Length: 277
Image (cartoon, rainbow, N blue to C red; front, side):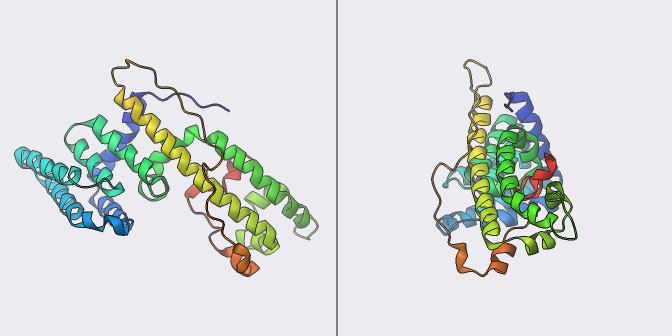
């Protein structure tokens, strides 16, 4: 299955819809700002105070009905943010500032930078709907590849389950069987294999997010269409092998239960087989 090119109009449609929703709902903004503050690295703590001030200034700009005050507040907030090193938080704030300033392309580019800087947080906590609408449509071959690997791991589990009185089929294992019962039938090695598969899947998904965030930004930057922007290749393997984790140090029950749940919604590798069965 191949992927299709995306136009600047499509990108702006999805990103503008997202920023408009965030700007109209103060409770969602506060939740996202809180999440982003918690995600700051120790090295980013020097930017915490200006980030908070920029967020407060943005809130003032959103709440005021005076156009001059709003414009002034947005300029102050932007100047604060661009004066410090770039972070996921600053990029997200800039996307909202540019949206209020009627600069949709700059707003979209800043929002896409969030997916480039921290794809895991962006797709799972900040903008999962935007991820599904704009990114995930391109990643279906990746999901299928990992689903095939998942099915291979679960095939032996299904064969064992078919000998039980419950008489589950291979599709039942991934769709019908309660997760607790599935875990109870899973050997330690199977749990370890699924754990490794999920870890690999998350890393590959992150890398594809970075690749396509860059691609989308290039399309927006090429607004006058004076050059061709090639559709990037999908990533199916990690670019670098992550540090090995010896899960065998834990007992089987802990290995089976720990972090095997739904980590990133419908597209988590442990569950997405339902979409293809």
